[in-house]
Length: 368
View 1 (cartoon, one colour):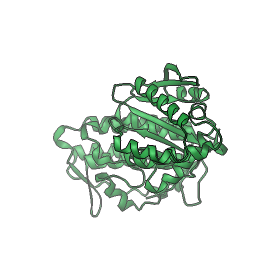
View 2 (cartoon, rainbow, N blue to C red; view 1 turned 135 degrees about the vertical axis):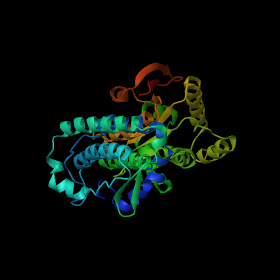
View 3 (tube, rainbow, N blue to C red; view 1 turned 90 degrees about the vertical axis):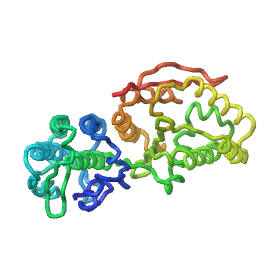
View 4 (spheres, rainbow, N blue to C red; view 1 turned 180 degrees about the vertical axis):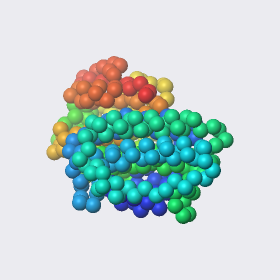
């Protein structure tokens, strides 16, 4: 398998990913039902349009694919796999042949292709594969084809393999990955520094030493709640992060609240706790009851602002909400960021003034 972004995963390892969660990109393709494979593949085109930007031809390292090369590869995966599904439906265990992905990158000069045309072709080919999967009868998902010795695909496995190819390469093309437990310190630091001059957080945590107060606040939330949910994203260069909560994942036990308070009392005063309580009350009062993905926090390091970090992080998270066919919700604590969220499909639903404080802008993005 070719190398793209931060990954260098042998192809035979990727072959096995069709049946389990990928440790690199976090996608569990085995959890995608056969009945949803077609629509999930189709949604990948929109995710790529949102993800591909900046210097798309630059390779992070000489042996690592550029974002454009990743997109070209996925474009061709969708085309080739659509053809393979068709053959597996009409032929008995066809020999599918071996496709050398690395050779194609060089021989077809992927990095010289027009990015706009690549995205158009990727969308077209995704629709071809989605249509082919739509045509699979209920009893035909286990029909097989042979790529090479020892590698027998079912149609369902082939579709999941293609889906993982797209998701994994898109994740690396954007330079964004799912955070793990070992990233907690870095994620908390990004959030503390990124929110140090935020209007709402500046109101909530008064006085000097704001970053010192915010660091244990975010560190506790990241370790106890966010990262364990498996939906916290971090950039490869650790310049930004985004913390999402899936539907039903916002449980906060009383015992955790008690420990949280003990941690904060070391640096926070009574006024800080009072404003935190007021903020929580407002957020809880206006939280939608409809199942949704919740973007609790997104931040870039001050030195990385204006470099597309937020766009890359939003694209990664929204690809998941779109894959699930669910809406998304957030509270913008900085009016300056509202237009950024609007460009990604969010709409303002309400503006709420905090007690003797700044406004909180509530935003909703309908399901796609």
